[in-house]
Length: 406
Image 1 (cartoon, rainbow, N blue to C red):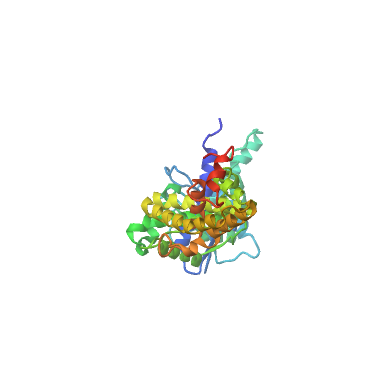
Image 2 (image 1 turned 90 degrees about the vertical axis):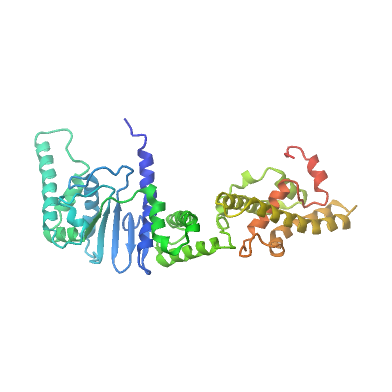
């Protein structure tokens, strides 16, 4: 029977790689850099090179032993690297597991800095030879299914190394037992920023840092950013988030997320009809859809995170409506009785003002807020609600349009 949770486990394991990399980079030196799915699951490079193989599980019961299949899968990978002619001796191997490691285990020394690892080498060699012999015996007896199909490739690779290569490999391995899993990420990040972040905003900073990191890793994987992330980039982002969340400031969560907008879902309503009334065209519709999506999501996030009260946003909307009215009413009066072409031109100019100039003329939501999308998108929402409009006669014309919700 297929395990219904296998896909979930695989996804969580892959997602954990990125989150584990964040924790490791927080611990790293200033000039270090990290990447995932390059040299290994997680690759940390600085004065030394550390290849991290991750075994993730929500079940942390049990202890690691030389009979662990995951360990031997990893040994197969690392054995091939040790055999490379240009192998860099500053490279070290880190095996990360949620399992425990008993102090009586032959592997225990790999979790310490102890130099004498002869008994570890002996235990691995003994297990590899045991697996080999049982497979040979199964072949001799012409069994259809050979034992240890998962473990054997690692055992075979290890036995294929020279004695010196085996010693070199064992001396370069570190085991990190009892490692945290994906559900612990927030706590692990919080531990590492605790001394530099005020308690009041600590949880928000952790959440925003993880959101940024998640997106940053994805951009690297799709080649829209460097695959490697440097410690200085992470440090700057933490400083930026702290600054945004300081008293008098608000964080920007959506100005760089325009590619997430589904334009068609934002249109097909009164907002689009308002732009059509002044013959604004598709380019103005697209920018309106993006700005409204950004503004709506940003306003909701601020409220959900308890960073701002809805009354402050209502005050901003009132300032927008007043500034719009100061321009709209003279346009309405000055162009009374004129032809539709002139009315459309004047209305389109007002629409462009709401996008290009309004955010420069209207007092921002907070002194430190400088991103235009909040004003741009809020104007489009107000237009969708018929509170503002662009055509001098927009109210009468919109009511006559069939198929538009009013």
